[in-house]
Length: 107
Image 1 (cartoon, helix red, strand yellow):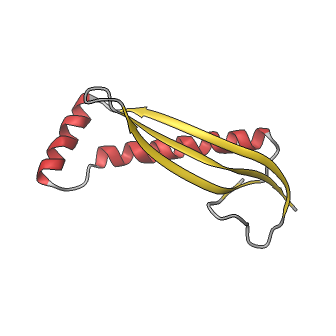
Image 2: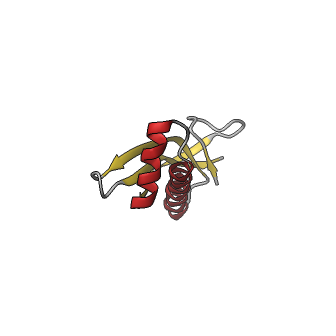
């Protein structure tokens, strides 16, 4: 299945719009990762553990999006938008990724 942030697929025409589809992923973090990320914030640098969790959450959200689109008989999802949020407090931080787009059949 084609998943694109653009509104069109080059060389293809949209034959039918099947509606908005979405996929969400919420990933928990743990105290050790948070502690080391806090140290990184103080000394500078990238937090590889958080980057890895964000990649995993993005992939899970896109897979859920694709699954919902497939259930509707779509060939593609266009206009995909990814949103990232941090939810929770100091001790219970979670990362959320939402993927939304329009499921379509192509001709």
